[in-house]
Length: 102
Image (cartoon, rainbow, N blue to C red; front, top):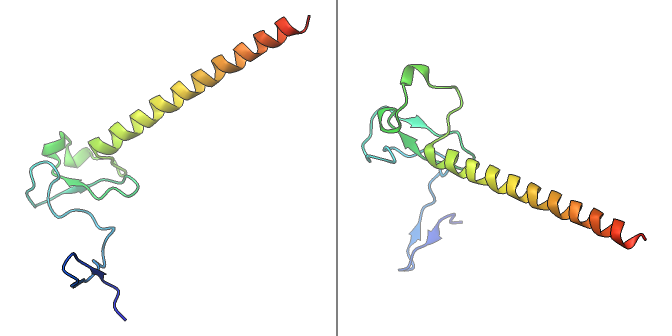
């Protein structure tokens, strides 16, 4: 039984046992060394503290890379916009109901 996938040439490629492991090089400078790993769900990125402007001595226990922070902020902004649109729609419906009541 073979757990690998076939590449374009029909050869079987072995699956990496550690698909959920983090990168071995910094995502920014592509060098190895002491790296900090992102705690974002499904994120495999790792960075040198200096490359992301962090102090390794004061790093929080849970750290999110710039990409995950940006994605979270974008999702939060979209959620707030959706909530605002929904509230405006609900208020408009209430105004329409008052006009039709009478």
